[in-house]
Length: 84
Image (cartoon, rainbow, N blue to C red):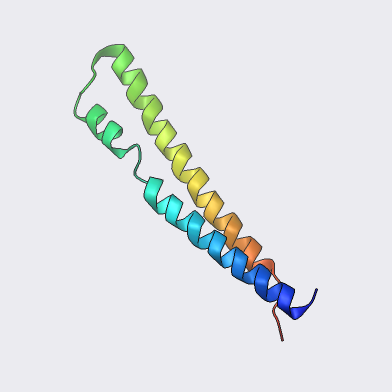
C-alpha cells in the first residue's frame, strides 16, 4: 500500500473513531433517566420491578456495546501500518 493510501486510511479511521466516540458519549446516559425514575419507585409492584430490572440490564448492555465499538475502532486504527 502506498504512503498516500495509508495516510488516507489513517485519516478516515481517525474520523470514524472520533465519530464513534462522540456517539458513545452522546448515548452513554440514554437510559439513566428511566433507571432513575424506577429507582424512585415510578412504577411499583412485580411488573415495575421486572421493568426496572430489565431497563438496568439494558443500560449495562448498551454501555458494554458502546465501549466495545470504541475499542474496536481504536484497534483498527492501531493496526494500520506506520508510515516511515
